[in-house]
Length: 77
Image (cartoon, rainbow, N blue to C red):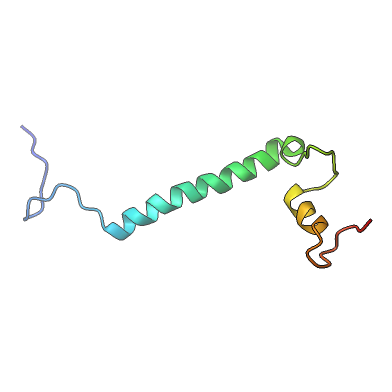
């Protein structure tokens, strides 16, 4: 019968803690940015739509410019 080759100390699988932490952090970050890019590329109009019908490329930028936090290039009324 076939036996799994082991290290001299009997270890079958070895994974460094830092490598595991890197993968655990990388997957959610990649997923987050992938979802944002996917929604902007394939559903742009729905993604940037606002309830009040303001025409803006990215609503969060428009809200910050309109909030009065200094002159950020927003349109003044």
